[in-house]
Image 1 (cartoon, rainbow, N blue to C red):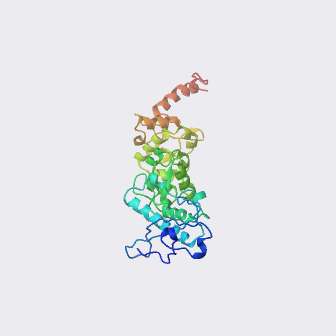
Image 2 (tube, rainbow, N blue to C red):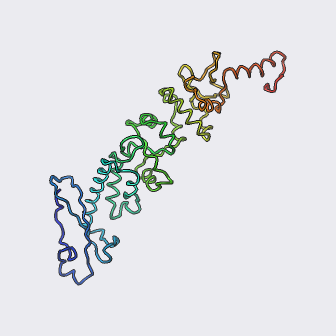
Image 3 (cartoon, helix red, strand yellow):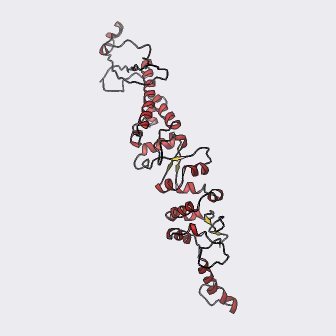
Length: 326
């Protein structure tokens, strides 16, 4: 790689000589750190050397590094290039995981605009947003612009990248990030992804608001069955499900469980009655049936039995003769 041009004269501690007028003014020292960024215009294999200049104090401290020194500005910019190259190398060698991301300059109060190391923060943000560098749930790394966080494992497993694209109205598939990015395990990284990269965190509540009739009609029976299994484990969402066209009928159309206080579908039974009935292939498990019953769905036979007990005696005698006839 090409050597950075116009290196300054190094002070005595670095093998050079300070100008005479500076020797007696202050205690001045130099601290050197070597980095090897890949310069975009380099065509050779020579390493690029950059070194920070510090003034006074312990050589292990960073507090006394002159932030307005031109050489230091140049070094920070070169280090930003090196940082992005390192991220790409880690990705290509399958080592760019959540732990590695936590080591990046993520805190805007420490690395944000106005700080000496702002270029590192900006380069990291730009790279993570535009390049496939974020660890994905079920595939190779993804760019932040095409990523989403899921609050629960069940949401990640149920909704596929193509389904997310449709639900969020995007032109490209959206991919779930890994499940180990959570408020409890990685609060700083999670905050960075949500606030700095604007990656939305999807909860069961928010994604159900996007599920409508056109989307449900396009899904397979197997996926609808999985949806019922998922919803059966979300009792807190019961009220939100009212009015959603979740019930797939035998003819493939969708209706809500109830409308205007009336049941809109029935569970299938051994006898064909002509009532609108849930398609058998989407309620073939006990978990699915349990969910549908919590929505107030009856089997056809049970409904007919209810009618015979509650309504027919009342029609024949003019008065209620059953505890079910109110």
